[in-house]
View (cartoon, each protein chain N blue to C red):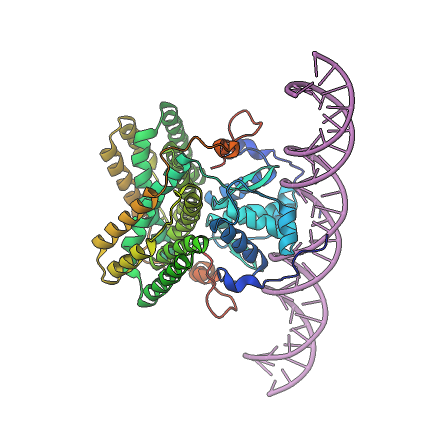
Amino acid sequence: MSQQLPLKKPTRASKSPRSGTQDDVVYAHIFDAILEQRLAPGTKLSEEALGEIFGVSRTIIRRALSRLGHEGVVLLRPNRGAVVASPSVEEARQIFYARRLVEKAITELAVEHATAEQLAELRRLVSEEQACFSRGDRGAGIRLSGEFHLKLAEAAKNAPLVGFQRSLVSQTSLIIAQYESGGRSHCSYDEHNRLIDAIESRDAAKAVELMMHHMDHIDGKLNLEEEGASDDLHAVFSHLLGTRKKSPRGADRL
Amino acid sequence: MSQQLPLKKPTRASKSPRSGTQDDVVYAHIFDAILEQRLAPGTKLSEEALGEIFGVSRTIIRRALSRLGHEGVVLLRPNRGAVVASPSVEEARQIFYARRLVEKAITELAVEHATAEQLAELRRLVSEEQACFSRGDRGAGIRLSGEFHLKLAEAAKNAPLVGFQRSLVSQTSLIIAQYESGGRSHCSYDEHNRLIDAIESRDAAKAVELMMHHMDHIDGKLNLEEEGASDDLHAVFSHLLGTRKKSPRGADRL
DNA sequence: TTTGCATTATTTGTATACAAAAGCATAATC
DNA sequence: GATTATGCTTTTGTATACAAATAATGCAAA
C-alpha cells in the first residue's frame, strides 16, 4: 500500500509547539495521542506502521519511542516492540507519591521565582483547559491540565525538577485515563486558578496547601482501591507484560 | 586504521553488571569513564571514534549517547555532536536542591521498606568504596559512592524516585569531579555506614538527619562560591556551550 | 597581522538493507 | 483432541550508505 500521509510536518500547529525537527514532531504526536486517550494503554506501537503514518523511517520512530520509554509513557520490551504503558495500581501509588513530593517543592520555588509573564501564561493555559472541558473534549483537557503543571515547574526554575515533572505528569495523565471513575471529571481548572492566585500573592504556605489538596482531589477521583473485575484481559494482566521474559531473574528495567 | 578492539563484551565483568545487550555495555563504559573522571567535562564524544573503539556501529553509540543525554551527563547539541556535560554553578545548585529533596524521601522510604538483604548489599558496597579510597582510586570511589545512593533508592521501592536518583547521582558525581577542592576527599563511607545503622534500626528521624548532614558535607567540600578566575577559556565559558545556537530564542532543551 | 570569504573536509542526520529474533500457523505425534 | 515440532511470516536489532549541516582550511584583501 502507498504511503499514508505525504505530510512533512503539517499538523504541528495544533499540537505542542516543539522546535520542529522530525523526531520531535513524531514524539509530540504520539505523546499527545496517548495523553488524549486516542491510544489506549496496552496498544502495540509498531515501528513500521508508525513510520508509514508519519512518512518517516523507522530510525525516527525508534528515537521517539525510546524517549517516550524513558519517560515511562511507553513500555519498551526488548525484541518485542513497544506498547503504551498501563501502570498497575502499585505503580500508580508510587507515581503519586513522587509527584506530591515534586509538586510541593515546585510550588515553593514558584512562589519565590515565578515572573508576571509566567503567571499570565499559566492563566492562559487554565482558561484554555476550561474551554476544552466545556466543549467536552476530555482528552485535550487532561493534556492541558498536564501542561499547566509542567509550566508551573518551569516557573520554579530548577531544571532537574522540570525533567522529573515532565515524566510524572505524563504518567499521571495515563493513570487518570486508565482509572478515573466514570463521571464527568476534572473541575481542576478552578483549583488551578486559585493556586495561581496564591503564588501571585507570594503566599507559600497557602500555595502549598492548595497544591496538596489538588493532589488529594486528583487521586481521590481514581478508583485505585479495587483494581479487579475488568473484562479486559490486557488490563488484567498488563502488569506482567513488561517482566515476562525468559531470563531467570526478572528484567531490571526501571 | 584497523578496528581497535575486537572485543564483543569482555570488560563487562569489571563494570556495572548490566544485562548484556551491546548498547547497555557501551552506555556503562562511557558512563563509568565520565564518573571516574577519565573523560573530563567538555570532552567531545565523536560517534565514529567511539564506534571504532567499541567495535560497534554509530547506531549503538548514538543510542547510548542519547540515554546519557537524557540523564544529563552528556550534552547533546543538534548537528554538533555530544560533549561531556560541564554543569555551571547555578546548575549544580539546582541539582543539589533536587537531590536533597529526593534523598530525604528515599531515606524515609528505605527505613520503611529496606530488607536485610538490601542492607547487606549496601554494607558490601560501602566496604568496596572504602577499599577504593584506601588504595587511592578516587575515580572508582566516587562511582561506588554513587552506586550506594542508587542502591539505597532501590531499597525505597519507588520506581520513579529510582529514576530521578540515577540522574541526580550521575550529575552530582560530575559536579564533584569538576568542583571538589583539591585535598583528599570523601570519607563519605563512614557516613554511609552510620546511615545504614540508622536505617537498620528503623529510626527514620535519625536516618534523615544523617542523610541531610551527609548532603551538607558533600556540597561543603565543593568550592561553588567562586567560580571565576580560571585561566582556561573553556572553563570560563562552559556554561554557554549548550545554548549557543543560531535560533533567535534560546533553545529550550531542559 | 588580522579579517572576511570561499572551498574542502569532517561529522551528524536519516533512510535503507540485511540479520536475528519472536510470533504464528500448520502439521505431526501421542 | 490436545500438545509439541517445525517451517514460514512478521517485527525488531544492527550496520551501512547517502544527504545535509557544520567545522576547518587556505587564500585574498584590508
